[in-house]
Length: 123
Image: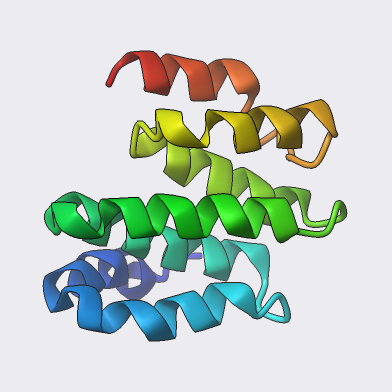
């Protein structure tokens, strides 16, 4: 709480460009890190995809794969994935998102299916 540096890091990573991506992917794949920390890194990937449009597809596909591979008990981490995919307007990830919601693998206290659809429709 009150950690202003972690709020700035996603923008810094985006400015670094795709060369910053591999350490970010390694971090979010390591589920020993807590969900909130991994969520902040996912936001960094989101910003990177927004700033470097050619990298967008790789981010969406990578996050959708993480969601497919995620353990059921990581509802918070899965919710961060759903949030970032919806923020990116990743309609191509809707099948993975629908499956995760249908299987109750996402913490609805963080992001609901309706939240995802509202963001997707805004794209």
